[in-house]
Length: 563
Image 1 (cartoon, rainbow, N blue to C red):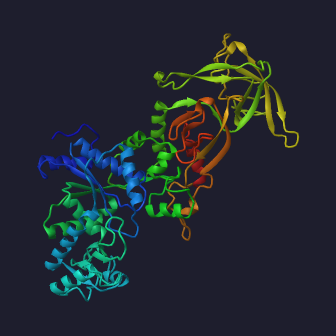
Image 2: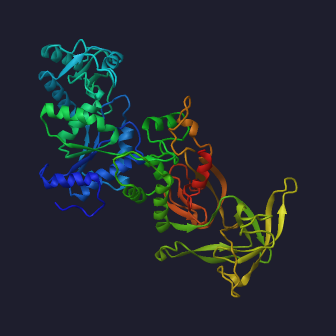
Image 3: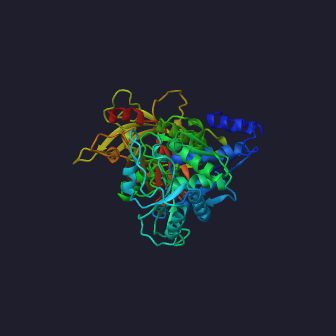
């Protein structure tokens, strides 16, 4: 098999060597094996892209397998969400959808085989006692008083465990390896435990369940996986996997570890993400501030941008934190090419063009996407009364402020030059509520026949044609680059960003956005990229989520916040 034309990395080097030596008879077979105990996040996307990508590049196969051995935390909801996320990213497992629970009978028979070989035993120690007997990194463990039970007694006890005769936690099946091993995982690890809980797939058929370590390597073996690609935290587990597979003399995949994705200003632990959901710091797993794929999708991220991001960051052997701006730049690059430009005013300020006829409306041509001429143009209405952004006017403009101010001329995008002549204020508050401006009819389309130049160009909407939309401005969920880096006595939630969501309910949108489909994406000119919310948006009042700003504005802010 020819080496694929793609980026080289240490995993591909290992596969190339295996193909040269015909280690697996020319096969490359990977798998993506999530536990269905939560929603997938951007870190899982890296693993999905890696496993399915390797299989595609080497013309091999990739399975989707659910490692579902814990009935207390796993649900069909998570299974369906994971399947949807993998498909959304653009990958297809074809007919290779598996569950570790499919193998419960085989796994139990493997456990019986280890008992018969004298390599496993039933232990009556409690979990606390097992931890106490295990020892420390500097102190060897102590053998369980039940370690030398006879094969016959162990087989009898294991069968009675399976039959439900014993209470939860009263007995476990342990491997008999080495209580003095320098690797604590090799000190007689647990293989089976009693859990009288109903499983979401097998119901009450089982009351003992295999541990993840016992199940994972054997599931890979059963499926004929050649390269078992894991994140670095499983490096210490590899000797245990090797021991189990070698003792049972079954097909032995090669485990390869790579660095997991750690993203700045983000938490990747499913346990902690679940806490954020349950404690209502976010609205749910698909909250657009969450790093879950469902959250990113709802926020407007594209699968293409996520795949591009995973390709750019590559595969490494050492853990590090990838800056969130790299992901955002991939999204910007993708959306810049593919989204239609529209005009929306977030914080409206009324503008009256005093020399424009009151009963007149013009249809002006606006470019949908200058990056893609094939997207054509649209008509935007222009009339006497407009809305501009409050921030685009300053009564006493500071230096380098080139937008509208008293006596200053600016360009209205696709329309005319206007000059501010009068400022109307609320008599009680002194707040600017209306501007009176004069337009130059000769500048239609935004250019001047006499060649004069203006430095500021503003977006706007016609007041008579605009309609109200809600806009949600999302920002980083955490203020600190590494949210887990906290002082003693505090937790990661102390780094939650109180300004991660700002909701604006009276934004004004151009009429072309009426009927915008949920999930559709746009660039709001000068403001950023936005997506129609898939949960809360209605035909009467669309809700737009900010996907990402037009440029990285967080870098300067975070330098101050992180201090």
